[in-house]
Every structure is written in C-alpha cells, then in structure tokens.
Image 1 (cartoon, helix red, strand yellow):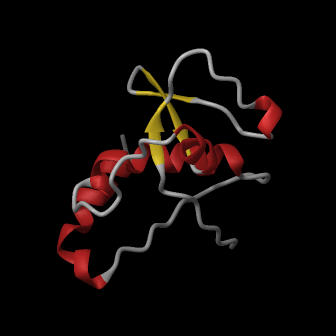
Image 2 (tube, helix red, strand yellow; image 1 turned 60 degrees about the vertical axis):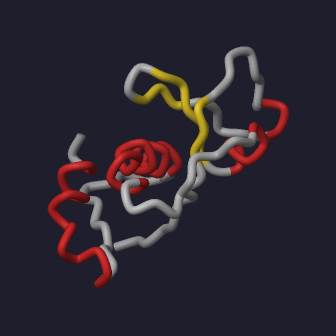
Amino acid sequence: MRFFKFPTLVTQARGGLDFGEHSGRGEIIWSGESWLVGEEAVRVGKVRDTTTNEFLKKYLSLLLGRALLDVEYEVDEVVMAVSLYDWHRRNDFRQAAEK
C-alpha cells in the first residue's frame, strides 16, 4: 500500500498556453473542457474556491484523474479518507469519485 497526496487547486485552462517549458504536466480534458490542477492552476490564476462544501463533490473525479496520471506504478484500488466532519456525506463523495 502506498499513500500520496494531491493538490486541490483547479482552474479552467485558457487556450494556447504551453506549460511544457515550466515542467508542467499539462491540461486534463474533463467534462468536455480543459482543466489545470496544482502548480499549473496557480500559474494561470483564478483558481476555484476550495473552501466550499461542494468543491470536493464537484471536482473529485478531476482530482483523482490527475493523481492517477501522476502515479508511477500500477494502481489496483483507490481509497479516500473522509473527515469526521463530512462523514454523513461519505456516499456523496463515493458517487462523485465513481464518475
């Protein structure tokens, strides 16, 4: 079992930006749109508010996708920890992750 964290900063990508020279990982197509996650999102600016209750529910599949692309080994299973504060919403998070 291996653990890793992933950044939660996301922003919608603007066309024509090249992040290769900055050692970026590039855009992810998610829900038919281009997105940036982590450091790339910070460079572009206008990151989505991560403090809202709905942030993880809305963007969880994008964040998991970025994390799985970054993993350098085979992944058989993904386990997500849910805080006690959000425990009553655990099924919402499960459904968001399965998208």
